[in-house]
Amino acid sequence: MASAPPKTEPSTSPPLRADARRNREKLVEVAAAAFAEAGVETSLEDIARRAGVGIGTLYRHFPTREHLVEVVYRRELESLAAAAKELAASDAPDVALEEWMRRFVDYIAAKRGMATSLKILMDSNASLFAEGSGILRGAAENLLRAAAEQGFIRSDIDTTDLLHALSSIYSLPASAEWRDRSNRLIGLLMDGLRTQK
Image (cartoon, rainbow, N blue to C red; front, side):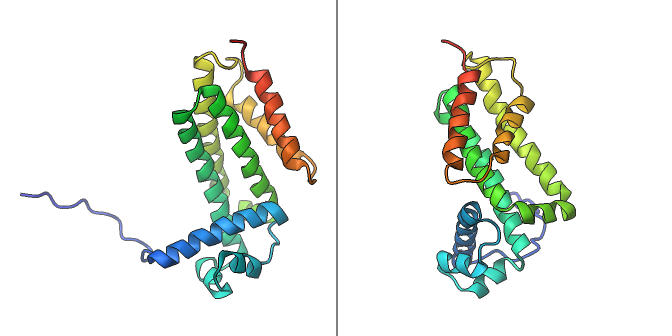
């Protein structure tokens, strides 16, 4: 006799149709790029237009700008965590760590663009940022430990050291060369981490 399927909690909202899900994903993708390029004050109408949907569709998915910012922030965190696993599975540990840090620059770019709205969210949803901090720490720790255990990098650097070094990039002045300068700093950081093999 076949066993009964496991019970699941009822969903708070019905699942999205495939086209609605695609629209939502496209809006989040376009918003992330727009916030990184021009900041959170980017016109929502422009985001909708670039995503190929009407402004009504944007508001159906994201009733407020802060709601859109929160979803984009979560997406960036989840992408960074997924990248850590993918890179660890496909590259040498030191290469995986360096590439992940370069992706961290993309995360910082998006976060800088959303700074004002993120401050508002922090006041109302502190758990979101505690969760985000844990996600980043776990991803960095796994990559750092693997590279150190295999002798690719120094073993006297811990996750807190690495995240403080990476977070300092956030304080670089905004300029046309911000991303190039940030990537040069990643190279400098990796030169300091690597052991001679």
